[in-house]
Length: 222
Length: 286
Image 1: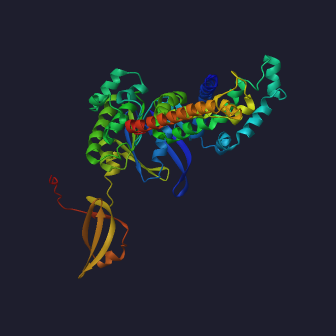
Image 2: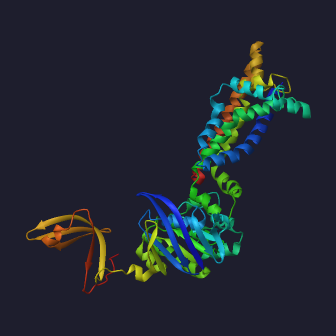
Image 3: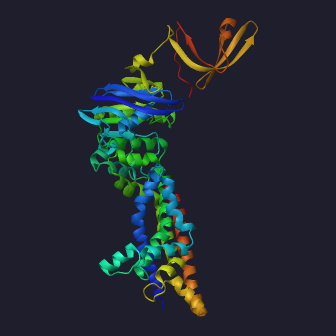
């Protein structure tokens, strides 16, 4: 009965993990660079916020389908199809939720005092050591915000998932798609239960983020 | 032995200028770097630390830190650097701030006790006063036992009493570890107390270089005392003219002749000097 929720959470967890790994160097670079490329990269990462999910879904379909170079390569080499399965959901979600991971991290890094970062370099620490031991621990609120919002946003996605993954039970049928289908077949009771769960969880997640951030601010003055 | 010969184009307040420094420093010297703001003092310090690029050469104890555009990263230079403020790692306790640089507990505890911070070692930077923070910063910059200690106006944000204490601690650490120290400062009394040699920078060039006492105890003409101040007002009282001058926090009145007054304009920087007289030193009433 609750399999769609399980798929939603599995998808969101994997997406958060992948996006964190990708976004850490990207957001650090964006926060430190004075390159002319910066606005270009920023616009590119922010695109998923403004694009209709159908546009994003369409392009991802085109790029991954078996007629595309990438899709045919994976089909021929590994006999893996990149669309209408769980893998395609992960790929689509990584594009869709990218700005929700990059932007909080970037503004967190930008808010750090330059002197503190320099002090770490002058202490002989590399960039990576500085990011892991100095930068990240000092932007905990931004870090928590990035992870939680990315997770919640991935759980809440609908359009892209439907286009790229369809609605295969146990494979690509996530909670939001399940609700859509319940409404279509007029199973209002099921839709009510699912929707209430989504609503309740989303609120609790957001509440805990804001509570944590307020507490952290009082404690460290960051 | 440190040899510096560098060049860097700067974009100052008054348009472009070039920082052009040729300098030899002996091991163990305490150098004060002074001059108007925008003259390139901080930039010179940052180039030495490897935080900014420059052309030329920096050689420290037979090791090239900069040569033929090849620059050693700040991480690889034996440098202690003390920022003006806000450089502590906020997520770490005082002791952790020191140990992050070098896992040398004995040295960390020794530094903390030299600066009277032992009791605060488990506190976090947020709970410290400005003076305490700078003390921690000083201790932390000594953790690598650096060849060169660079201090970028380290005490300018502190009140007078705290300054005096920290000056003594800086001097104590400088001697204890026998480092070569370069400090940017605007405060003549600080420079006098701490440094052995003073460099004055103007528009990216060293215009004075000598023993601190000789550079500071400059007196034009034969004045015994001279103070720089701002002329606030010229008041005509009967036959004389009274000039009102602000010197630091004090306002003083000086009688000038009509002829002298003709050359003065309100708002000008002026120097008040006097020749022979017997000065008395009084302690301010508490």
